[in-house]
Length: 80
Length: 147
Image 1 (tube, chains in turn orange, purple):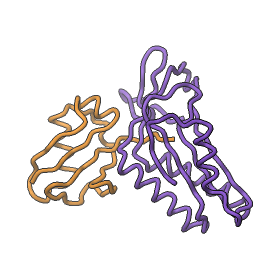
Image 2 (cartoon, one colour):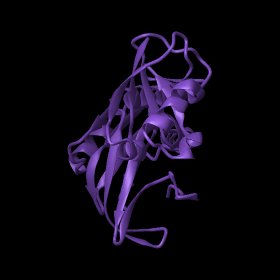
Image 3 (tube, one colour):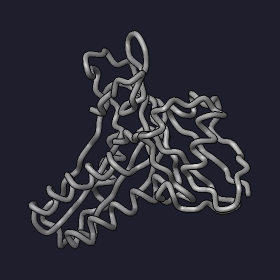
């Protein structure tokens, strides 16, 4: 299955892109996606402090993903 | 009225956001402004760059308004958040909340600000003399605390 991954802020700068299409096994989890991203996009171990959103909703890192999901990697927020 | 904009938030916008929550049943209106400071954690700040995951950020602002409604019965809440490049003294955020009596308006405003700073996918990069940093992100093992 294929998911769209969105990078923001620090991760966007480190990844060198704001988005990527990633092929994953069916029902892969955000945790598995993060392992892929860590390796492929040279993101720092600070990924431990991220939240994951799928289709604009926060999810647990072990919730299975589905084909066509938009997955946002959310670093520590600082709005306001 | 809840929105995210890359346009400048000027005094007329602050007035408009405030006016939207003024209803005859409300005896208290609290308007909070977030503004850009010049000095942060020992750094001379030059400007800030705000970025958002806009669709989700708007959803989260609506969710916070719903939480306020549910917790205090307050119907009248308006939020405007600016993104893009902001200078010192600029307004980044306007939150206006109105209620019959002031206790609820003050409490709900504090709650809304705490929630905005916790769940809304908006990030700010501080550009200062000597460098830049994404506020709140660990940098080389050192955490930069959000102001």
